[in-house]
Image (cartoon, rainbow, N blue to C red; front, side, top):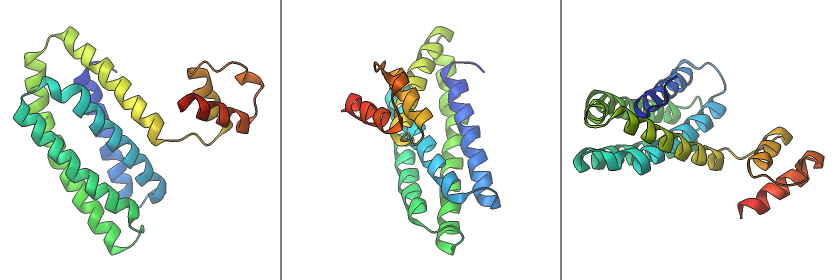
Length: 179
């Protein structure tokens, strides 16, 4: 997969659409899917707002931020709704429609304009910045729960002695490093 910002954004859009498909079809674990959707949508939106929207016309960026906020409100309502209830289904439909509209505008107008106005090198730089910002958000939104996840965070933070630590020690070391 390419590492330019447009490829990364559209790849996220397809992943979000796949989560919507799982949720609307009733396949999978709705609570886990909503948690994953919340993390991905939130991290994606923050990365776009911080790293990509400053590169586009201010009116388009402002509109994109407004659409992100609308999705955030609906996502919060979805997280608090009980799967299988009418409230959950209605909120999911509204969220899907809102995000679908945003994706269509972004892929139809904003991203093509960005591609035309930016060099290949600049799109790659933006891709790197977008990816790093998104990954930072995902780390914060998906707290580690297993020893392997704590170990991975400890390795990323270069915490000494991590290979001899048990899960609780790793968790404490990672917590201290983060604060």
